[in-house]
Length: 314
Image 1 (tube, rainbow, N blue to C red):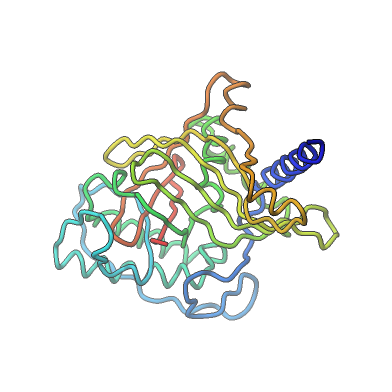
Image 2 (cartoon, rainbow, N blue to C red):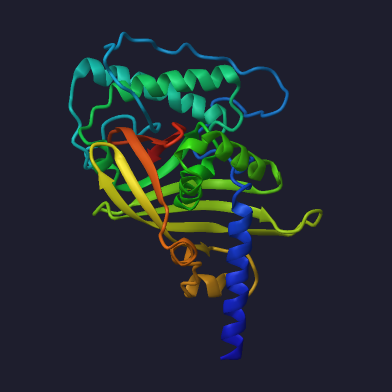
């Protein structure tokens, strides 16, 4: 009994330490990008990457935008349950735009190494795709597993954990939030990310965020904790494009810490973040994401600060 209590305390401490470090660990270039990179990625120095021409198509002046998407899931996939409005001209334009977007995502390591010119090209591609969204009520059609392929801001800001923090700061404090997240992001360069995923259940009632992390616990020492940080949230869909989320809890799975790894996997050791918020402030803050583009293979979602996250079907 004493051994079990000790393990539980150690597991909770590990999770808490990782969660605290998460805030500044997601944006460092890390594990190879999951899609095939056409050119080697260089974040610092090296010759400039060739920039491909971006398609420009005349769009109606009264179209309102916002965005997201993937690579070879670009072609329509009969196994995906999304009701896409078919128009041959628009469909061919979308395919070209998505290919350009995925190419830029791959050579910039999900946007972390993007130059100003590349970032502007992606912004343009995303706006064009959002204007050509083929799916009615995109927020209702985000079920399934999604993998992040591009982010216009720190990728951790797509997690319900950080959406809750952003919500607490208030809509009017966007610049303050940007500064706070940037400080966290720069606090350490030793942490690295692998795959970043969002999983939406078939009932549109829960969103699970997964981050593969390698975290340096002590400065100057080659001691790294690896694992997947999993954050779950209650999901409420408000058509046509809005998701409202209340964070529930955060846990670590697949840890490389001796003795604790199996314990974490066998026992549902979780920090009840939502309950902590409720105990401190009386309620759980509501994080908001809005999806303006979705089809069988890609989803483009924005936060309240208009940062966008491009996800591909996993």
